Image (cartoon, rainbow, N blue to C red; front, side):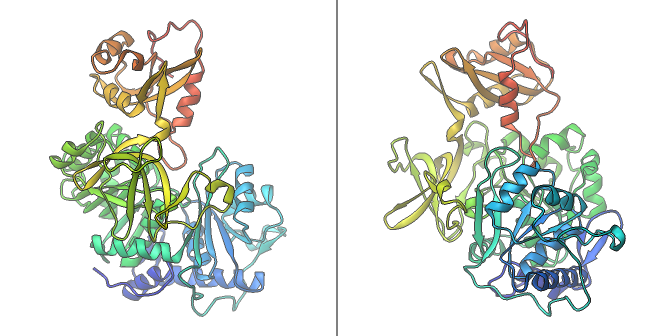
Length: 525
């Protein structure tokens, strides 16, 4: 394991990689598009210098509006090198959403690829934009920053521990976005934990599956770069033969949402021993099912699987559970892998429905050095942060139970619904539906019905007759929790972070096809 350079800034992890692997690849994009540490470093220094010159000094917040390409990766590094906080945004979000985020973060400049440039010109034409991939002969573009000879900084700007490193937004493509500012000190504690727990080194290759605006991407980039490893963004086509991609690129570290497991299974990539080169496999962002972890472990049979948990407000992840076919299954709740124990230096408390502390289970609240100072908009803080015993806490909105020295995951507070006075855990319905023969995965959602709610189950796998579904579930669920409808899908819709899009499913559930007898006709849409 490489001994990291001690410094306050997140970007000094890249400098550590530069120190030990200057001429080795830091980023591998296409079949032949590779960028060595030295090249990526020089590029980031030039772009950081252009920002500094154009803005007349050190910038405050710089948005990166680009895909998973050279501009996106070097842009994040350049924003940090300039001393600014990086604000990565998804280039395919609606223009109105992007405009909200740019305003909320008080962005001073943008680093963009051509698609990002078009989006900025539509929603925030007043902002200066550095678009390195725009040809010189493209003609005049209002607000465009151009690289000039001599722009490059001699070295990255110095930062203090309490300076902001990132501003991340918690919403996807719908809803009012909440900006989460995270400091270099927040990340320093996080990566100290990571460095002590894992043995990443120069020989590793990291698969990078999520978009750069998703906080889990920070794990990929700065774990890899801190160790002198190479980052390999995973193109959509790679899922057609993921074992082939893993073998060709010699991938040793995988990190994705659990939804990726179902995709790889459908394409035949989970055959026993099909990915022996994976040393570490990490899953986060949504609940990891024991069945999925077991299938992945059979394919990556020489490696270790960890289920990671953590809200953006607490800097990427706050806990980890190492998968064991024996232990994990015994500690699982509703077939969900435990989320493990909190990182060293963090504290937990659980609150019951009345807000009183409960040692056995309840809403998980966390405090410690990874906690954000609060949302960009102070109005968003209400109901999320509180002070107890002189300590500031964050309410995660997730319900857990204490199992041995770890936490078992029960579900979101908003996944508990009341149906005609009966309290129903949607996670329990999901687990029961998944046990039906022929069903691969299932998600239950609630929709309005008269003066109450009713459940709709969306599922993948083989089509199952609704009557057979009801017969299977009747002994497993109380009568009021029996779903009213079952809809078969070839695959679940995913949001921009590759999580199952429950909002989309809830919207579909509210649309009632004509001449449908409740609960008796499946939906193959």
